[in-house]
Length: 458
Ligand code: SF4
Ligand code: SF4
Image 1 (tube, helix red, strand yellow):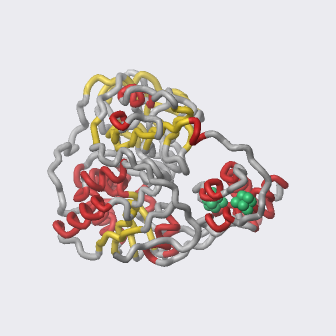
Image 2 (cartoon, rainbow, N blue to C red):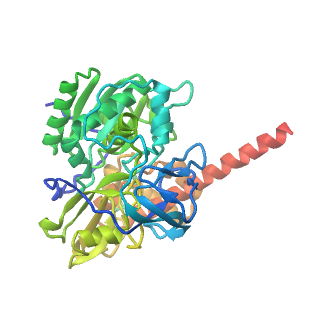
């Protein structure tokens, strides 16, 4: 079998997919949900409900706050208790709608049945409108509004839609489970997006998921879709990175400062394809998704793949899964390579939540950083072709011009450099900061140029 892979960098951490055989279970409803207005990329949504309002599951509770923004829906039926600031997973304040759960009554017109609807009747614009109305955003981590990504600017055209089923982060198995359990819905969702873009489609899945590859191939064959295939990807982190996937599948590099569409590609995650299916064929807004509860200090029988309602408090999920395990030194949202430490267990899940990962002290202990021995391993591992040791040096020297010149802004924060460094230098922390500084300089320059152009016009 011809296996696909990207050509620059990458590392091979143990995949630790301990929860892969755990079927998706539906979590019970909590007593209260807190739905964040800032759970997608772009402008926060604007609440359209007030305390005392009665809401049903699937009802709009917030409208997009800008062009790049998304609708937010109530995940439950109940009474709005408050619209107020609360801290999110990372401890940042965001407006949340608090809803006391009083049942599970759904808004009119939503098809909650399991019956597969494979015929795609809607035209392009109706599909885009439905995806927008249902609040679908990218579920691979970026949470970029899907209707915007599927509608490239004039003059830009995709010739390939890539569906990302790599799930290359160790431990995570939520995408794997939906590929095994809902392959036909994912394939119909992919075909809907193909119809919008008018191009072929490749679903990329890493070789360590043969059951998912077989299930998706069988669904494509059963539904008779042409111009759609499954591409088997080599196991290599970060195979699921957007730019890496485009290189793996199409042998095209997305240049610095460019977007995937500039290389003729649109990338969407398998969970997004499922959400698109539900939005377009079932009129079902994005109010739930699947997450993995896993870790290296969690007994096997307490690992789960849960379908949860968005806005469910993390503390509720942790309790349902038997509490924080003994020996857990760190709790992470996402995978061990790119995930973020959870600083607030009172925070609530969002559309992008993919896991609760418990890691023990041994695997999270920071070893003392030594001096750079100029071994070059970080550069060899960097999938963006950057020189992390140099970015680290420039960052420490406060040389923002140098950071920009050496493309710190292209860093995808994958952590391959940190993973490879024998001197334990905190490269990821530092290149993240370096990237923020380089992007800040680029944005400030663009804003100044815009202001100068406007002043000239007057
Ligand atoms: S975190 Fe950034 S600098 Fe480090 S390997 Fe990944 S892309 Fe390269
Ligand atoms: S891997 Fe670490 S020690 Fe080696 S060159 Fe990079 S920063 Fe220096």
